[in-house]
Amino acid sequence: MIRFGAIALCAVAVFGPHAADARDAIKIVGSSTVYPFTEAVAARARARGIPVDVKSTGTRGGFNGFCLGTSDWWPDMTGASRPITERERESCRHRGVTDIVELRIGYDGIVVASSNEAATVDLARRDLFLALAAEVPENGAWGANSHTDWAEVNPSLPAGPISICGPPPSSGTRQSFESLAMVRGCRAVLADQPVLALADDVDDQDACRVLRGQPQFIEMGEDDTEIVRVLAENADAYGIFGFSFAYNNPGIIHANRIDGEMPTKATIADGSYPLSRPLFLYVKASRAAAMPGMRIFLDSYVSQEAIGSAGYLADAGLVPLTEAEFAETRAALAPLLEAAHGQ
Image 1 (spheres, rainbow, N blue to C red):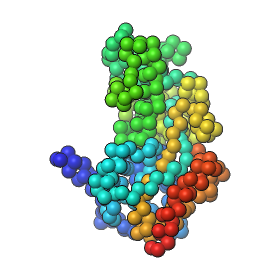
Image 2: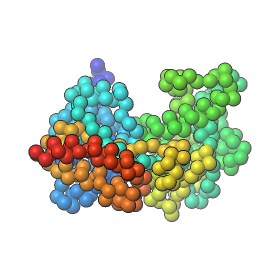
Image 3: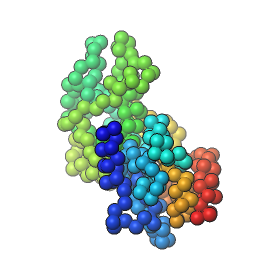
Image 4: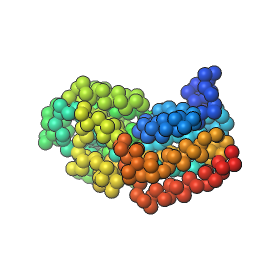
């Protein structure tokens, strides 16, 4: 109970109103990967006189604030680089947030990037697990990871110190990377050690998810541009972040292959790139009806002009939905637009 109260107080400090805030502004929090796309839509809304406040808090941090209530104190929407969990839905229900609408806005790929001064490499997911896991299986038992050089992980990789910058635990990118890269890589390693084989139960996968500390894994904040800066200054370093950050910095960094696949809009869209994932916007229906400008903002966001295959967010690195998926998202949005007509 004390811990929950502490979390709530911290959330008030981050998400609650401040004297300088005008609460006629639409409040949006969440994923650092979704943030640049939402900010691009928000910039256009502000040019039309609709105030929008967008903060990058990480996916988990976004849900924490989003679920705290339905009043003006709390965010109206949150961006997410993974689906909301049942535990998060329960947290929302506990605070009366029961009118959640999920809008899938596009796709992203988690990339493992490096400086343009470094060679492009092909990293298997088992390589990433053996490089980043706090513990690895060897000779039928788990033990502390002693790998410090890429050549120790895989002799076919260029020799060099293991140094990877990545997001914090609050990040949806971190959580998706653990599921899509670490657990899958772990299973590949354990295939050679059946005595340690994992069950399908999530709890049995926890050993595969725990990342080691510095200097092999350097935990950064929610601002992925900081990882880009580190890569630009260090040719030995790798960075984990969303595809759009590599897409928008071709003169500085490049993505690397994962299990033989290069992340491109095509490979992310068709799922052949193994670290592909959907991106979401979660909205409180009651806020869409109550907040001035939300109908216009949402209608603009979920539009062909923004998230369509020729939209301005695609130009910024968002991988578009298929036509059928776009139609599903518009259908999910329709009740919010109808409710907002009465505001």
